[in-house]
Image (cartoon, rainbow, N blue to C red; front, side, top):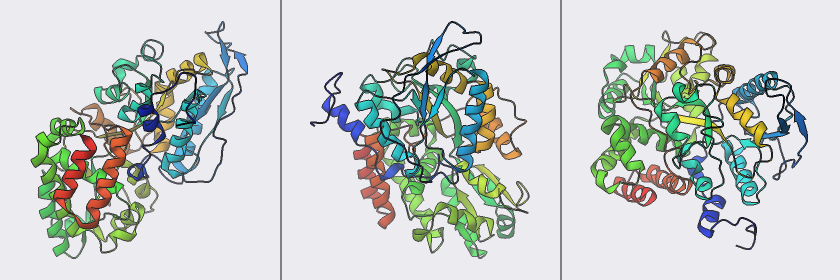
Length: 454
């Protein structure tokens, strides 16, 4: 590997993890919301500027280098949300110069590639948008992230305001290295109220993923699509399988599987794959050629009863005139997951060799504050990881989600979004799901998942 840096070299294995691990499994729409695949361009190396300013507030004696933040939210709900966050930060720290250096497209993969290169070249930005949890393990393995427990998490009463799931994700190697900003819930089952009533199905009474199969059969007998699912790309199936495993076998088995103990839970993994195979009998005929938005439209149009997706799907419902929450559409926790809040999150870490350490600490403290999360999340269609953010700015659906989160007994981390498994395992998992949807071979998929996670 002739292009590895000479100074502060990474091991070859860690270099390969950083340079790879951006496979098809993570090419998904979950974190991008609507309209984030624009064509804004940026240089890979960033600005490299080190202008200093002096803060005139309570920290008047502190000098700050210019803050460079990279993210992939360049349009749609994400673009509006990140601008609201930066506006709040500039109000609190008016003398800190902020340089946004967004990298659009690829559902975040373009940014991931840029950050890997910059970290390898010891030229990181001040901070960047990153999935927390195991996704950050290549950087913690290479000692490229700072411990911010005292300097950041010791402020704003953060530790007391965050539940265990988000705090776990902020500590991929046992120490705090990043600050979660938002939460998208994954264990949702959305439904069209009129369709399920016409089919004589009560979603609240479906108590397991296997029972959902019977409900979908009843829906199809009434002339509707059971589940509006897309199989054009594999990530939706990977996400769905994880919720089936969680709903049928619980958070402890889910955590054990993601920790690599697949063989010890072989029956659970195989059976959850078989349930997904049974689900596939109730997908729309064009599932292999449509996007998740197209699939969701079938629910909106009254052609399908159920739709599994992250809570970003509700953004489409809110945009439809005459399609009101609880009257026309509603949701329940994915069957079997009452009391569980499955997490997908975005966060901002602090790299070593930081070009603006004091400004970065100020920014991360702000990201973890009530004000930042109250500004950002209503626009993004997500909820705050803090449990003390006022609900007034959120609509009724997100308010209900906030209540569910605050009262949840477990907050398992997403497999499909890289919070629960490291990048190389996630890439292999994506390949396993791609093969699975081509023929629904349960035994082959089990072997592929075992190889990916163990």
